[in-house]
Length: 352
Image (cartoon, rainbow, N blue to C red; front, top):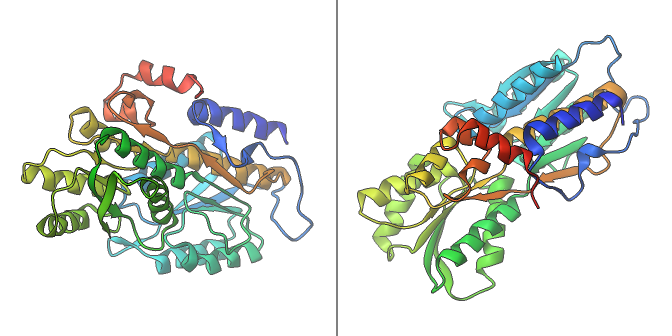
């Protein structure tokens, strides 16, 4: 491992990973291994490095935060970063994201970090970039049908399990719950549902009586929740695959005078405020900033001296955030739910 990579990894740990566990591989601490000539693009010492960072859509606060942290990290490292917004007509578009990849490949970028809108739809474009000699690291959403350099993400299955475990904790006598799933075909949506099902299917007290997609969108969550209430008993709790949908559910619940626990996923600032104010019960922190900076570090190490990660996949351990531990969220200070010094103390304390 190069000395520069060690320094950057230490900086990433100090800034965003100090209290998180890396599971299933600790890929960023990889052993040095150089690909054969022609299989990857290793930058010369004096060659400027330009990377592209692509997300499904900057209409999602989660991806705005991820992109902002990625840009700040690239600036800190002194490398150029091209921001690619995959949305088209106000919605994520796999076609737009694929076209963006083709454009930066033609431009000759050094490497690509991408969170694909749809892993199956984006796999051919990602593989085309790799075939052109451009290394690709996926973030948040893993693409298994392309020969990517690495993947950095949160353990979304574990995040769904944390949601399920929390539901069982707050409903000791059982009850009927609703589940709002994310975008069909998106691996985070699939994995979060799998994690929740892993927990709920193993017992009989709590049952899911409504499980529908709301596309990760607040407005669709309003429609889905209103429709579910019209045809079913009010739920004992609602589990949402992201915070945006939880906000829509909260809006409808308040309008109908329902006081029910609502659990989200993403730990957005608005969710942290809602938890503090009692309008949401919990959310799952998956550390998008740490995902982005770690992915850039992995890509940079390869571009500078051919260092490959020891394992392809690196997963950050998610965290259940409730009113009891708001300061541990990545965006707690931004949300105003914790003073800066308190959040810094939490960052400096490793998880047990």
